[in-house]
Length: 168
Image 1 (cartoon, rainbow, N blue to C red):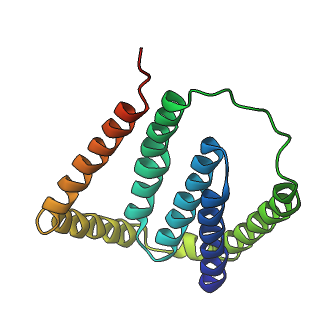
Image 2: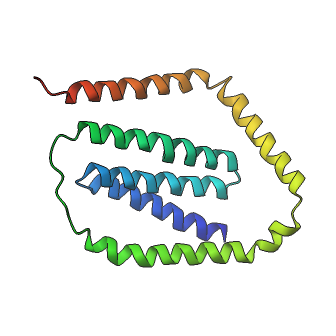
Image 3: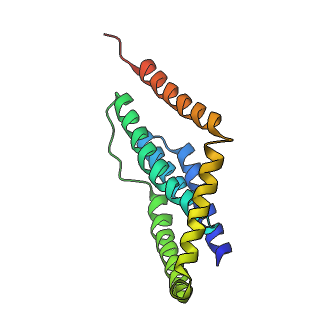
């Protein structure tokens, strides 16, 4: 079952990435990036990295994407035209969403006995050790790349705002 989840959400992440590149509207591209980030969160979760999956949803799919959409709205000076939507999205989207819902329902219903009989204390200890391992590596060995990445993102956003500023 884990292989099926990996194939489905891996394909969804690749399709979202391709859609991100092929979209003409920046808001649609940002929404495709949300699909990629959520698919990656499910992949992290299926690998047993629950903390990393939660951080992926909260930090990237939540905060960073809101920031991207804010910058897109700030820089978008033109009028946005209304479209009826992509025909391919209707053809592939509804059956795809139904298939993902059915697969997830099957996985959770077939594994519910494992959730009931599992040792909750052992599960929480595993999560705690997982968090402590990630934090110790992130704030000791990878502290410089972590901080450089945050400064790089800030400089890129400030540069985009300066370049898109209208002259008076």
